[in-house]
Length: 402
Ligand code: PMT
Image (cartoon, rainbow, N blue to C red; front, side, top):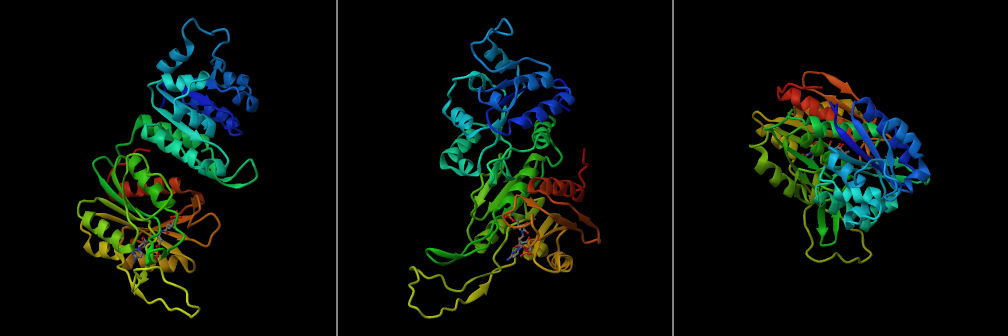
C-alpha cells in the first residue's frame, strides 16, 4: 500500500530512538524508499550504521560533512519526500519546529519540506504535560502537522504516564491510512459524546466522575479517519480535538442532551461514550456554599437518559452505547442494550486493570441485539475504536476493505 513512496524518517535524541530501527525496517518491507536524518543526540542512542543498513541509504546527521551527493542535500531530501515522519520527536525538537528554528540537518529539512509531516512525540510525562510542550504541539497541529500518539505507560525514567512513543506498527498504520485514505464512511455523518459531565452545586463545585474522555475521543478520531463527518460533543477534558473533528463543548448532562438531540435527525451514527451523570443537584447555589459545621444533604434530581431518548427516537441511525459496569458485566450490559434500543453495546468492566476510566487501554466486549458477542483482549482505546468503526460500517451496510 506504500509501494514506491519516498519516506523521510527524522530521528531525534531520546531513548525511543531504538524504535526507529523497527520503523525503518517495517517501511522497507512495505517497499518504500526510506531516507533517514538523525540529530546529533540521536546518534548517542542508536548508531547511524544501523539505520543506514536497514534503510539501504546514507544517513544524514551533519550539515557540513562531505556531501554524499552533488546537490544541496537538505533541500533535495526535503523536496523529494512524499512524507516526513519524525519518530521519536523529543520535546526539544518539537519546540524547535514550533519556533521555526533550523540549526541542524533535521530541523532544516523540516523547515524546507512542503511534504506532510507526522511527529511521534516521545518524552517523560512531566515534559509532555508541560504547558510549553502542550502549546508547541497545539501550534504544530494548527499548522497541519499530524500528531501520532503519544502512548501512555511505563517510561524509561521509571515513572508511568503519557509520553511514550507510539509503537512502530501504529505509526505505519497511520501512514497507510494517510496514503490509501479511507472512504469507508465517506458521506456519513457521525456524532460521538465523550468525557464526564459536571453537575454544578455552586459556582465553584460540581458532581463529576472519572471519565478522561479518551475513549470517546478515540472513537471520534477513528470515525473521522474512516471518512465520516464527525461531531464530538465533549464534556470538559484536557485532550486535544482530533484533527478534522468538530468539537462542541458542554459541561452538564442537560447541555449534552440539547446538543445531541438537536443534531440527531441528521446523523447516520451516534456513539455515546460519555459518562453522563444520572442525577444533578436539585438546586444550584448562586454563591459559594459556606461551611457551618453542620451535616449537609444534597437533593438530587434525575437527568434525562440521553441514550434511551435516542433509542426511542431513532429511525435509520446506527446507535451505539457504552456500559461501564463494576459487577455482573454481561447481564447489566445486555439489559441496557435492550432497554436503550441500541444496535451495538460496548461493555467494559471498569474495575479491571487496564480498562475503563482514565486508562489509555480498554478491555471490551461488543454485544449485539441478535445475541452475538465479540470479546477483545486489552488494547489501546484507538484500537478499540477502530474495531468499533469496522462494526459500524457493517451495521450501515457499507462494504469494508481490510
Ligand atoms: O473517558 P475515559 O476515561 O476514556 O473512560 C471511558 C469510559 C469508561 C467512560 C467509557 O468506556 C464508558 O464506559 N462510557 C460509558 C459510561 C457510562 O456512563 O456508562 P453507563 O453504563 O452509566 O451508561 C450507559 C450508556 O448510557 C452510555 O452510553 C451513556 O453515555 C448513556 N447515558 C447514561 C446516562 C444518561 N443520563 N444518559 C446517557 O446517555
